[in-house]
Length: 239
Image (cartoon, rainbow, N blue to C red; front, side, top):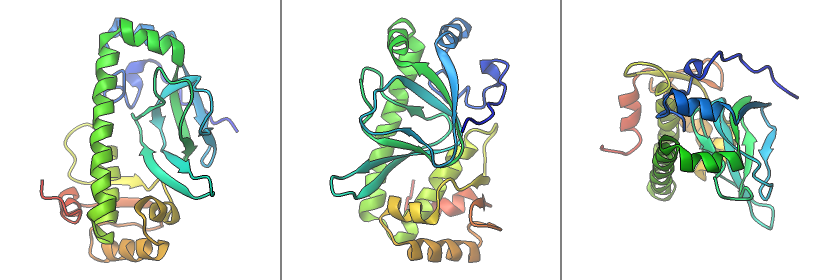
């Protein structure tokens, strides 16, 4: 199934323009990127890449959320990451992808053919610089997530995940956000798998957060965080 692609008149109209790999590019550099880019859309639940697939393109997520999963030989599956709007998908200078990447919601990608993109990194310093920054940010996030999974309580794990998604979504809006509203991109079952918890624990803690006023929701997916600082206090982080 192919989804309708929103018509973006130019890169300046793109909702991730100032957060994505192209965020530091000037007009000439954007023009070079435009020559090798194209858009692709995926329905919720559709696989974007299977582990081992040839890496024909790299991409920025424009809309939606995708998950990265690894499967062990005995069939056990572990989610190892989430890709949110403005995140970069794929690795230049690699021939294949090493994880399954699945659209958790409807997803729209701004794709770049891999080989021309690799050449553009050499020719366009702003692209290479931004890609390095994003890679280091991803490394920091992975180290932080090791702490979440290894040392935090169930309540702190769920608060950390909600806070991460809320702040990432809020960062796409202009101005400094003190609250956030977003659609939770994954199910309770997927949250449990990602956090190493049971689905009953996730549901119980989500209900407790709602009762305490840390979050609000009318259904199971549309979440409002009235005060990001109060939610952050529940993550177990001081800074």
